[in-house]
Amino acid sequence: MKKLLMNQTFMTLTSADLFETIGTSLFNIILLTYARGFQNANLMVSIVSVATVFPGVLGIITGQIADRTKNKRVWLAITKFVQVVLYIVLAQLISQKQVTLLMIIILINIFSDILGMYSSSLRMPIIQTKISNDIQEEALGINQGIATIMQIVGQAIGVSLLAATQNYQLAGYINALTFLIAGIILITGYKSLEVPQVIHKNPSAHRLLILMKQTLEASANINAWALLGSIFFMNAVGASMDAITNLYLIDQSNKLPLPFSVSVLIINTVMVIGTILGSVLHSGWFQKWSFKAVMVVCILDLEVFYINFLTLRSFTIILITMAIGGFCMGQANPKLTASLLKVADEEIIGSLTGLMTTVSIISIPLGTIGLVLIYNIINPTSAYIVSMILLLVSISCLLIPQKQSASVTLDKSN
Image 1 (cartoon, rainbow, N blue to C red):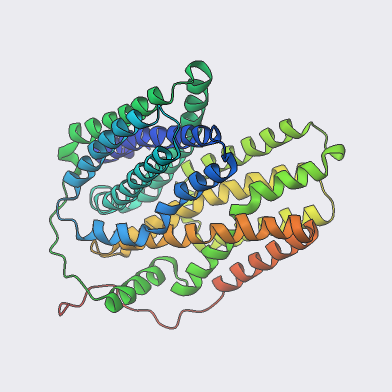
Image 2 (cartoon, rainbow, N blue to C red):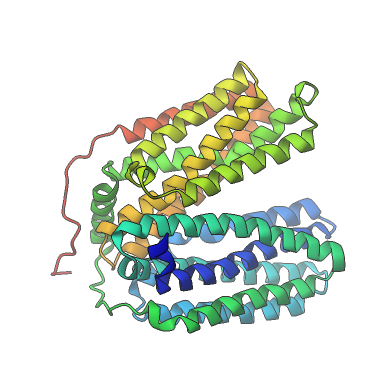
């Protein structure tokens, strides 16, 4: 931790992320509340919900653009100031309730989130170059933990602001202010973000896929496509857990030791605490814990979670499995990203992290729509069993052997 606190690059990026995360989470809750005020509230809220997730699907594209960006620190700062302008414009529009204006506001928010994805990929080569290998995992974990906390803070600020003022326009200006502060922080620490310029060799799409496959296998010691498959299926189940758990608690409300709302609050709190602890504990023994081992523990934990729904129906087991699952999720992403940074060529690191985001995002509909529909249309037991099957597929993917171990360097001819 001391080495990280002394690293100006880490402090600059983390401080900027803190305010950016507050702004993003603040406005997401504001936009949902704004959409609820329209006549077709369900439709509008659904559109906003889809729009909030959509930019993540483009992660592989924004990652490739970031890889081709020459002066990454310049564009990293520019994106924040562009987002400031976007939210100032948005604040002018959100004072009126018109469907056309809502669509424009949603498009502005989507564009801002795409810029956020792009700037996230721009950070990766900077972290790779300016933060030493032995503390990269800890740095990424702490950054993720802070982001988790700030998401809650941002949502709380958004809800409190609306409750006190009912002023959506003010919320837009405050959001612009958070991005302005993030941009000023990046300018203040500008010198610490300097990395050597890399001449991009612009590999073909086929060559890029080969390089990404080689890098994934070298970093995680897992067959690349099997790794992506495992992440896809586990994330699909994870995406549905909130909804499935809430439905389960409603069905079992008369058997719960606490009222429904209190039960939901306790479960969510335990999950968040587990995630934060998993995010920040990346030194000592936890640093030696492999990504594959984390995935296996997480999947087995979720299997127990659903077995409990089918059999014991113990509230205590729900809390324990939620805590362990949150901890493992907090461990997984920093471990994989840090492993990628250790072996990846700077030219493809943005594409790789973007690919991880894309795979995670496109799996969300399978869980949030598919599994919830099974629960409501067929029966809860079927939803639990399908979830367990998807988890078994996920863990099976991790057992698929690598075909070969290959170099991860770019071909000079490309």
